[in-house]
Length: 399
Image (cartoon, rainbow, N blue to C red):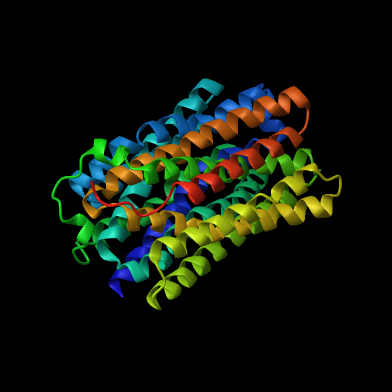
């Protein structure tokens, strides 16, 4: 029971992280906010990307830190820093200061994924990891789901400055529970792949599976971060929704992927518990998720608002089949005593896609005046990810 309560707490930590990293994109959908900071579409892309520059750059160091010091203390320090950075965003006076708080937010959140997945890897058996990872990553989607409508409500009811302050400081309740209630990770059992005491980074980089995971993770998160940074603006500008309706559809899109990620992780666990091969099972779920996500191109190119809104929800929800399983697949393939570094590399690739999606979408929007070209870019990237997982990611003997 204590183990699963900690897994739920990890999921709640991700909810808070994604509310704090996603609230800017919701605010950018307000014309008054854009006018106050004199923002062009390119400026909006740069602001949306600022978080990911520091977050991505620190993923490998964060992996090393949690391999060295465990999950509990690094996560507590990072959480404190990002909460204060989020709250401070309510006091900025210009675009440069706002970008600065987003960079600090990225520094604080950089340890969250590596610490969470290390704790799961050390405390959960293979047959439990799909569900545990699904619950944890459902938090990332629930954070985006509830973040948009809550942000819209706070801005409309009060103002954007108070929204940032409330968003940053309210999460500190989680920190108290984490510090007082959670034990640091301990090995669930020894795995054959962990027999060697030291796994060199050069050996990891020689594995074809790692490069397949890097490309596939970039592709998965390119679509996720397009939705996190530009979906609110797409819904209000291209589909002419009100801010309240935008918050509603954003909530349903991310809520759908959160639910499916838990169910898909549990379903894969059940197949594995009945004798299914862990790598092949989780890989199949991942591939189907990529295929379903690719249907977003239909919605972005159609003139029908109803069709567009359906595929905005369906494509992101379908990607939930991959969410828990592509992360659990990494934990299955690579040695336990290197998992922090591997997760760091994987999450670095994940968040480089956040930079790419935010900036490329802004540039394409300013160049073409619409979102169709951005939809084509999403499709191409997802197909690359599909091929990477299909052809490169497989079990390899330890070197």
